[in-house]
Image 1 (cartoon, rainbow, N blue to C red):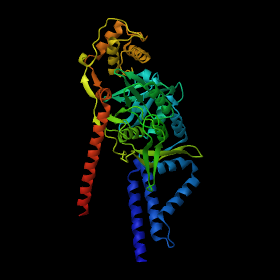
Image 2 (image 1 turned 90 degrees about the vertical axis):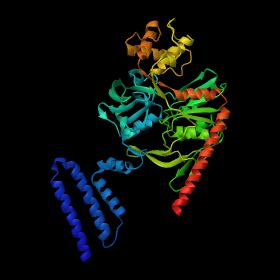
Image 3 (image 1 turned 180 degrees about the horizontal axis):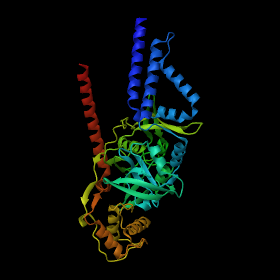
Image 4 (image 1 turned 180 degrees about the vertical axis):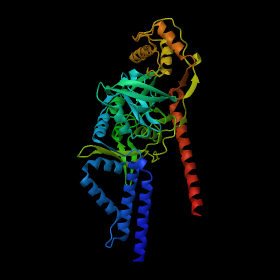
Length: 505
């Protein structure tokens, strides 16, 4: 009995301290009321669990408390569900009804917004792709920009679905987008519109090298890759650009593998109970060898594909270490509206290499190089003729290279003045205050050349390396890279074994 009263006295004292503390901080009353409610509930549950004559589990008490709270206040269901899913890993989340509808709509490849593909980033939302002719494209937002606000609401640190809810909206409505570019804040007033997402683009480069840029593993990616591979069937090798590819559906990944990889597992899923499952590619789709381009914006299914290319000796990986998101989520809706996304498994490469929190290490580590503009990095300009759609030549290549350096999408510069070049020229003319008709007249050419003087530009060393590898003896590079990975894995295993032995002593 004495022991019971000692416990009760301690509990009452703790309540007294809490009440005394709260009475001194009334200026922040709502916050401290919340803290007080939490402390009192926890103290009450612990007191009952420790002292109740007939015994009861703390978990059961919390369940009873939650049921009673929701019974009396059903409008708090969303708040309760947010609490359930809000303290898990960064990829698990609860959606309100509006957020869930938007999330599902975005998966379809058509939505109403500004026209960017984004991924979670430390400072905000990283723009991994700006879709052609979208509102964002016309406004001047670029790949690599980081969105930090929408209508002056700070979205840094928000869950990606919540942050996106401030960006998307009804067709014809305006949104003020704040971005950070090279450390400098920039603002754009953009009118939302329906945006159809293109999975990427492909073209044949000089030297009979195929190039495919794939922006995600979504509903249309399978058809796109099938079409691209058929179009480039006579190419020597293929460069597959997965930089800033945030991933997508594992089922779409399996379908894409059917056009690109040998028959066998694309990846292995590991669940919490130790059970595993293989996502199997049932087709032998390896008709070309690949040079896969990656960077720290390459995530999820895109990382899995890159790892599979290495494990099957189907190519080499070039660029920077990938993001390290190797988990699978399930998505379900609630009958009352809203839904959730929950991490249920980690995935491993076909050779069972871990991807999550590690990423895929490139066979050739190459980073972009930032330099001051100089003509030495580009094909010489001549300013001898007006250039328009259908024209070809070194002078077209020279201007495409410079437009590309400015972040205006022309595909891969290739001596051909096509529709991509037309839209890039038109956009530059709009920015520069010139008549926007998509023709490279001499005035526009001189303006572009003048604009770049003293600017910093990015040399795409990874692409240059990829072209060099794809143009040479790629089988030799694949064999050498496989041996280096095997050696690195063996050395790591030996190091881990020695470490384990030391810890056991």
